[in-house]
Length: 146
Image (cartoon, rainbow, N blue to C red):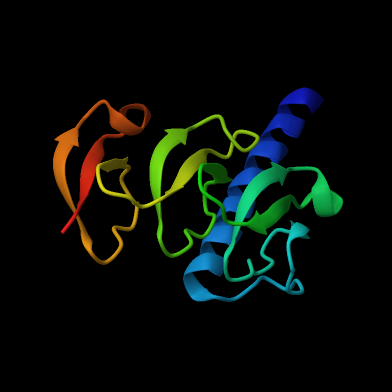
């Protein structure tokens, strides 16, 4: 019974952490934590401009969860809920990545890149052909320069 409760608590903590990061990313606010400048931060801490979230530790911050923030760069796996820095697109998905929270592969936009659902399409580009097998079965669109 203890093992089942521990697993449930871990899963609920991960879900709550994901919701907190999404809320912070969408609203620009944090759930009671100080601003970070990269490195490990507690769930809900704002992510600095130009940074992404690349790791999750469910036991961090007294078991409330912690996230690792680092500057965005081309060809980097980021956790679900991470901000998508301007000029980057999502090109692959791993549901087991980021300690089971899910992870998206960020790449700088370029002509002829395949993008996943929920990926922004930067100005000067448009989506064309669709491939249902892309992005680990989520589907992908060919993104081309206008």
